[in-house]
Image (cartoon, rainbow, N blue to C red; front, side, top):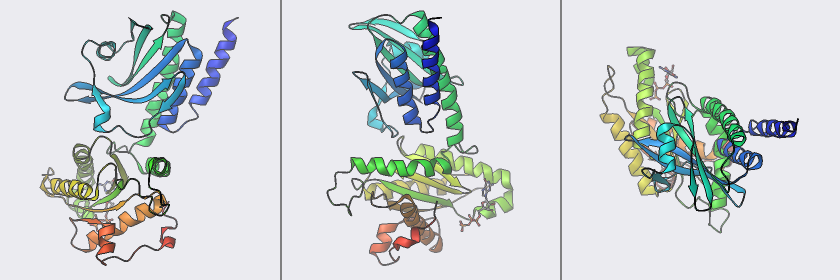
Amino acid sequence: MRTFPLTGKILQHLETLTRYRDTSLLKISLMNTLLSLTRISEVRLYDVFESEGEHLLALSAWSEQGEVHGSNDSPSDDQVVMVEIDSPIAQALSTQKSVAIQSVSGYQTCVPIVLGDKPIAIFEFDSEQLITDHEQDVLDGVIGVFRNYLDLLRDSQHDTLTGLLNRKTFDFGFAGLLASYGQESTHPSEDLRRVADNHWLAVMDIDHFKRINDKFGHLYGDEVLILMANLMRTSFRRHDRLYRFGGEEFVVLMRNVDVDGVRSKLEKFRQSVEQHEFPQVGQVTISIGFAPIMTSDTPSVVVGKADEALYFAKEHGRNRVCGYDELIASGELAPMKSNQDADFF
Ligand SMILES: Nc1nc2c(ncn2[C@@H]2O[C@H](COP(=O)(O)OP(=O)(O)OP(=O)(O)O)[C@@H](O)[C@H]2O)c(=O)[nH]1
């Protein structure tokens, strides 16, 4: 009978947990749940990546004196660390099972989260005492619900053909991203609150894609889209966000790069597409427009500016990279009027 209040509490937590559609908030909610249902004192959650057969970790949420914090951005390269050989995390990742060890302040338990046959995240718990079998059951059950829900959420956030993030995820996440960038910005002037001068949005569109479909058929057209997504994954950095916006249009969100860096990165990508031999189809080219992300702009204005630069590239020969600011400065494009942003979304 004494288990009923705990069962009710677990159900309440699960109800709260499954309300979230945002992965970062979901993680924070899960960690609060685990702290509240067990005698764990602190918890850290790492995202797990695989690179050349090695596991890499990036801290994505953590507690400090019981208060949970999370990062809502993809980790940059310098936030990713290698797993220490023979560490409990390494053991838990290789066996795909929980590992508990005695530590200076008590016990440390590592619980991997495995999707398919791949570990995608790992929890590290500190507790004064060894976790009991009952607590382990609660941990396993709640983490299992989290894993299944995360799997569903990931499915709904990604484009089925290319595996990139989808348009819905962009629409949902970009406004939040702008708001969080705004909090980070240190610029004193409201108008000039460009996000540390280094966040960008690029819209990319395959040239004459209709011709590819018409000449080789839709299956080859689809293959080009998949290969294009793979080229994007290898060309951009881990913390850049890659979206298929629809049809043959893609979007990249880039941060921590100056205007020269963004231009050369996009130019390099354009060249790698041009030089890639697409099976059957041969050469494919892409046109790219990019614009800075300013906290004073709405998402539709940012996309609208990058789109204008893209249309300029299309109208001036295709297979080019054009920056909105550069086109405005050179007088080749007239500045967008504020009412031009209506109803993009
Ligand atoms: N194979 C395939 N084709 C798609 C998909 N989504 C959209 N398309 C096709 O993409 C083509 C886009 O053609 P347009 O918008 O005319 O553009 P384009 O031929 O690339 O010409 P420009 O953009 O002006 O260079 C259309 O033929 C669509 O049917 C898809 O998921 N798979």
